[in-house]
Image (cartoon, rainbow, N blue to C red; front, side):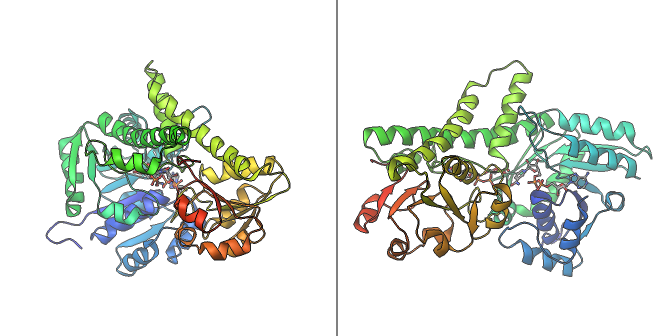
Length: 438
Ligand SMILES: NC(=O)C1=CN([C@@H]2O[C@H](COP(=O)(O)OP(=O)(O)OC[C@H]3O[C@@H](n4cnc5c(N)ncnc54)[C@H](O)[C@@H]3O)[C@@H](O)[C@H]2O)C=CC1
Ligand SMILES: O=C(O)[C@H]1O[C@H](OP(=O)(O)OP(=O)(O)OC[C@H]2O[C@@H](n3ccc(=O)[nH]c3=O)[C@H](O)[C@@H]2O)[C@H](O)[C@@H](O)[C@@H]1O
């Protein structure tokens, strides 16, 4: 809890991943926060402290702040907007066919703000939005303001990662504030002061672009290391060593150099395509980013094909796919590589069973032909090949002798390079991974 700094009254519109985590963390910092969502079921659950997403530590934090009276949930955007001094927009910005960003949730929420504000307010856009959205939303709200009250729109992009969202919110590498009005920017800077993070105050357009640039650059690192991994396989080098060797150079850094099946999730795939479209809209061909996206698509396919190289034709074979969420510590399946891999195997006639400790039930809804389980043992039993897509701790810590005793054939294709090839060979596994000598 912060001391000596005035608490603010905040409304978060959109109680999805970002709105819920960020709103809860701001309540923990001593502010009064109301989270609004148009999804009445979600709000019903949240009122009972039931968290609709899987995010470690979130439930306890929500519960504490609700009990302390700092955090509440409502479906009434009107009440929330009228009560708050600062309104955060954290609604979804999903992709449209062709890569454009669907801004309908942002615009709907803006119209609702315009109908309900009764005094001048600051509106903060946390959702990831194309350049120029802050300007157009400010205009939209002010032109439609029923009471005549005005808003100043500040861009404040979110950089949290799923699975470590609370840690990321309390320990951000930086806070980015994009504003046209210095006073509004200063108010948002002060709100973040207790976090003690480096704060960059800039123009609204730059802030909006920083968000896309960050995700595009991180995706570029991943596609780069995956291409290097593919070369390693051909020349007999080890991508783990190559990544370590380049990552020790401070100008490169060690992060986001983990080769594997490629990136997935709700943001990298969506935001890279959106950035490509933003460039196209200003007649610029963003060549590197186009290649990054294509490399990522091919990396999934390459991995799926590796399964047949390791295990032979998969038709009629029982294949265990371990890890379905797009990364560990989340139940998010949006654009998860596992779904493409499972789909590829199923289309080639394999009998696929997917294991995930958390996302298993959701995965069954996405691919009806996919058998799913939250039991590692059930997945491994009788498998002709084991395919690792997501490095959950339960998979990392798996006893390899126990696993070998369950499978029909000890063949492992590891898309996350969890084990050392020599260790696997010693334990009697035929082991294929990514970017290591085959
Ligand atoms: N998920 C993540 O890890 C991160 C997401 N972002 C960005 O943050 C934004 C939100 O992402 P998520 O939280 O994942 O989305 P989400 O889809 O999980 O949540 C959005 C929520 O907004 C609600 N909503 C939509 N329109 C509404 C309205 N008019 N009134 C009230 N509620 C409304 C929806 O019902 C939904 O619950 C996106 O722009 C995303 O790109 C940024 C960083 C991290
Ligand atoms: O805009 C967003 O929504 C968020 O997108 C990512 O966060 P997230 O998608 O939650 O997860 P990451 O940890 O970045 O992983 C994304 C994907 O890249 C893959 N990845 C990551 C790192 C790596 O070295 N190699 C690799 O293949 C992961 O397996 C995963 O599929 C960014 O890291 C966040 O900063 C950003 O806020």
